[in-house]
Image (cartoon, rainbow, N blue to C red; front, side, top):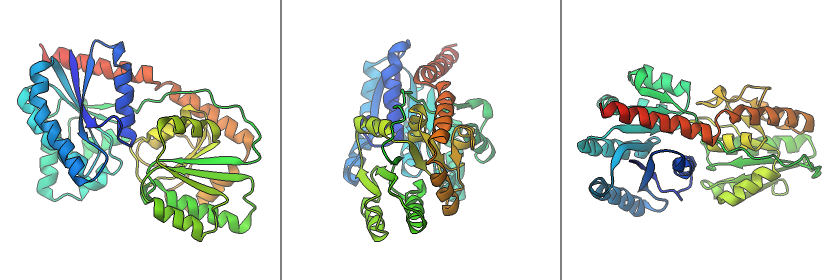
Length: 356
């Protein structure tokens, strides 16, 4: 039997595609095969519109030629939610169980900003699904309390993580800080630059380096770095491929991700799996994974002084070793193998119930 998985193309930049790739890679462990259908591609408006239209046209042929037992739809917020709700109602015509998998860091903002009639339609639509997967207990609480959905239909499944052996602590002569993600205010990149600028006013930063990797506001971030005179300390690489991500994780000591809103970011989990010290914010599902001073450092979003203090304290190699080791131990329980077993067990329970 096949699971029809619908979401961004597997080569699209972002955390959802990373999760999709990992699920596809481990599907050989199960009695299910994954038939992936791309509903979104990187590029301009017309390319994105074409990808969505193509996915709608392709659906009937997939059901005719493939034994689809279940549909698994990934969505985030804003346009992604609107597209996937349309797909949800279309796919209900084919009378298969449907799982909606929520990844949206700003979904709560999106939902509360909708007109009343649109909120009610979204609530109704999601109540028609077989199961909804969310990334944390806090997100389940939101769907239950704000969208008034049945808690028994909401399944908490934290994102998977692949662990790797951290590189041995080599004295590079400096501490390397890393940012992975979209360069935008929500992710806290501007706060990081401001923090380094304030540190530069009072301390010698010769033993510190910061690399920011990701797409988004590249020009604005580079301009701010230049304005602050931080080019010797901060490098912006733009978007990098998976191989480069692995290299950066191996070469770095600390991940900086002081976000304002999150689901449960893959960058954070990957850094924990690589034994890095994580400095992040207690938003979304993060505080269910990171315990301040135990396996990471939590700072309030937008609190530059707290971020400065966290960055400065993380120069201590002994502290980094303790936090990094604890972080890696934390994510061992949600390894890719464990994650896939949980997901495929959910698939099996849904299909078994639907066939009764």
